Image (tube, rainbow, N blue to C red):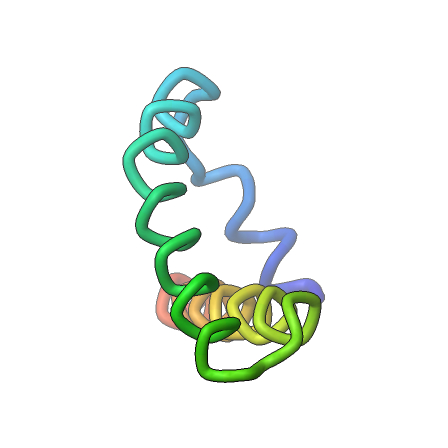
Length: 66
C-alpha cells in the first residue's frame, strides 16, 4: 500500500485524468463487453480489469522507488 501512496502524488492534474478517462473508458467497456460475451459474469470481469490496473500501478510505484 505504501507504494501506491507514494505514486499517487505523481499523478497528473484532475483535468488530464478526466481526459484520459474519456479516451480509455470506451476501450475498457469494450474489453468488459467481450469478456461478458465469452460468459464471464460482469462483476468478475470488472474485478479482473481493476486487478490488472492495480498490478500495473504497483509495478510503476516500484519503478519510481528505485
